[in-house]
Image (tube, rainbow, N blue to C red; front, side, top):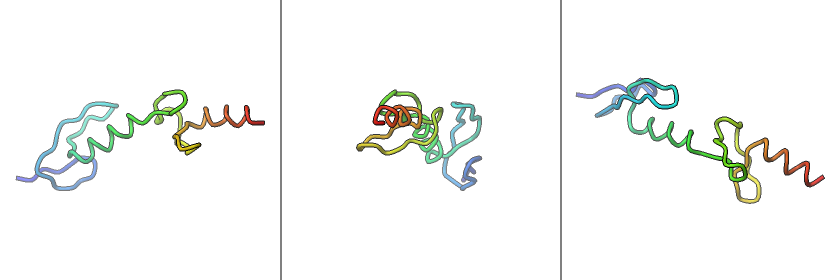
Length: 77
């Protein structure tokens, strides 16, 4: 019997009750991986989670948060 993911609404073989990061839904493994990856990305300079700092910016082959990028730009000027 196929189950339905409460996030992507796709019919999948199995779903898992996921209750990390403020989410409490039955999710497929693809959605669980996507959410876990989103919350695990950190700024290469300060190490803070990217989801708390805004979109990361590519700078010298590293992913930097906007706050650190602003600091870099101020130091360059």
